[in-house]
Amino acid sequence: MKNIYTIPASAGETTAGSNRPFFNHVPDRLWNDWRWQMRSRVRTVEKLAQYLPLSHEQQEQLSFVTAKYPLSITPHYLCLINPDDPYDPIRRQAVPALEETALCGLGDEDPLAEAELSPVPGLVHRYPDRALIITGNICPVLCRHCNRKRQWRQGPFIQTDATLAPMLDYIQKTPGIRDVILSGGDPLTFSTGRLERLISALRRIKHVEIIRLGTRYPVTLPQRITVELCSMLAKYGPIWVNTHFNHPAELTPEAARACQRLLRAGMPVNNQCVLLRGVNDTVEVQEALCRGLLKINVRPYYLFHTDDVQATEHLRTPVEAGVAIMAGLRGSVSGLGLPTYVVDLPGGGGKVPLQPDYLISGSDSEYVFRNPKGKICRYRNPKN
Image 1 (cartoon, helix red, strand yellow):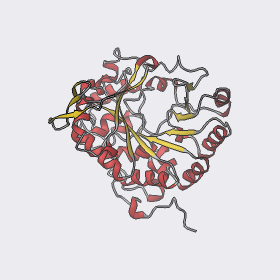
Image 2 (cartoon, rainbow, N blue to C red):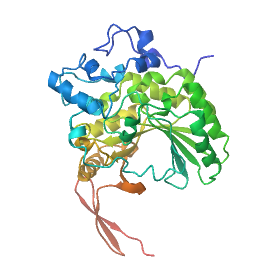
Image 3 (cartoon, rainbow, N blue to C red):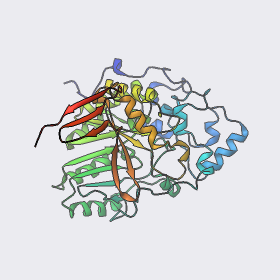
Image 4 (cartoon, rainbow, N blue to C red):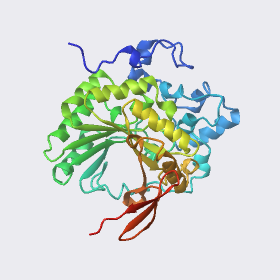
């Protein structure tokens, strides 16, 4: 019987030397092994300088940054960087920048007040019906805009069965929680067996209806999305996957293959993009991203305004930039491809949606609108 999670090579299987400018010598059996990708991450400035042109002065500056905010890039993601472009959008997301320490006085270490909203360590309970489990702080790529950047200084860690037990106990004793999000770090850093133990424990809690995985592995290390993983996850649905594409260049054949495998295993895949200066802060890039996501059956879900996190100021845009992008997308991209632009308010205030204002005036008898193309339209308002 054919495994329904096996996708033909034409749907994105890598071939020797394809799209691997720095790793042509690596055989397919290693390149497609997610454990090899994790072991082979670039984690020092000296190693990074073997692939990207960095002057001695730049290396010294970046070493100063990584002493506080570490570096990690998978071979897969590294190969998406144009080494000749210092402003490359993939580079800006993954390679440390001097501004991370030069502008560190701006922003907050924990702008969403997650520590205050943690009834037990590692579990955030902000909304009545949802709880979030922080599974650790290990990701294949340490994104420079991470809203939990504060955790990097603890050194790498993952939750153990012992540290997860109080979180599961709290969820068990809080029947209002219907939706549990596994976040991090990245929950797919867990071995498949360890992840199954956690998910199966959640499934034994009768009032937990939905489990969500917040993961960037489909983008930064798509080789992790194996047949074994998908077969395991398929046993515990409904599971929803929220991933994190920020730029069209990340929509690789390998990433498409990973998303297709999740979809075939019964897990809807949504995208949560973060608005980043110099990465995706134009209508053109966002339009290409949204269209590209639809092509691989991934729904553009949220466009997040960058949280006010310390060491991310150089990547933040004005809120007006996001509103203007949404105005540019409206009418140009199908409603299926329009994300909701949201600001996650500080202090645990929650997400609020923002959109351009198309309403000019209104009365009991008529409303006047301006459509996305600037045309004035009148709409008769029915009487009560």
